[in-house]
Amino acid sequence: MPDSTPPPWVDDFFPFATPAALARLVDIAWQHATREGYYEWCELLSHYGFMFDLECVPSPPEGWECSPEFGEGTRRLGVPFLAPPEFVPFGALGDGGYVGWFVPAPELGREDHPVGLVTGHERGAVQVGRDTRSGLEWMLSWTLYRWQTDASRWAATEARSHKLLDRLARELGLHPHPDRGLIPQGSPVFDVPAGWRHVPGDDGVGVLAATDAFSGHAPVVGCVLEDDQPLELALADASRMLDAGYPATALLGLKNAFANGPGCRFADLKPLWKQVYRDLGRPQLADRLDEMTESMYQDLPCFCDAPHV
Image (cartoon, rainbow, N blue to C red; front, side):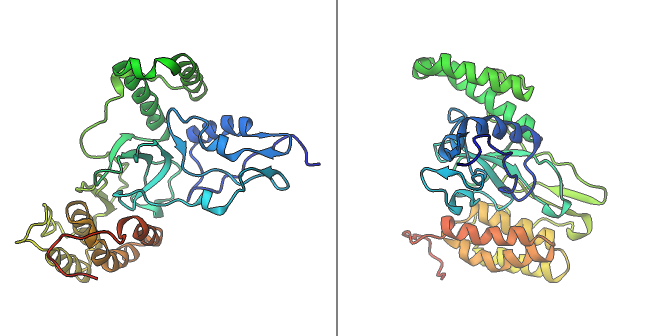
């Protein structure tokens, strides 16, 4: 008979240590999902379902039973549909949208990251917090805003949910308010190291890199790709920038092309895109392009004029 006292959860399910604010939320849910040698990981996954479902969860304690069976697929972090590779999701909203971190330069090894939102219906992302704590505060504010603007829909669960939201706010030291629950506008704000720069992009994240990795000129194709500006122009320009020693400018052009071009052209962008990430010392992001293949390049009807594989 296994010990009924749950051991601490193992923090190994994100590419970096879970930031303190989200770790506290996992702590609370872990206590509810583990009892008497039994791990109800689905309860942890959606314990705060009124706000978001955790995108992945800790592994079960050794020797503990699980139902349903726990598989490694539960711990697989994909790239949400139409999101940039720099977006690492930690929560699903249940409507196709996700909240997660912007990690534009994994090599910096930072302990926390800006939090963003992707809708799952439109390309790109928008920043909702400068770090995990402020991102969660926005999530709670967004929940209050929804309750306030659609009171009849939420009336049945409002009392219970308000109690839970109030507890979360106390536990995390947050001060949510419905007036701060609107989706922000504008470019993301990053902590830029000395000798680096951030250039906003059409995907909502842009490029953060050493200043000398930029050419100083905007990519050739930075607007909607039309018949007179085929994708090949973006690819040729990015290739020239990479060969000239400006991988950050090459990356910006490819990411803008992805944000504005037809989704069926993702496979055409991918080889050079991966090479650019590797040249910048970001193999983790190159690997995430492989994850995107499953969501962005499906066997769906294509109506664009250009031939592609």
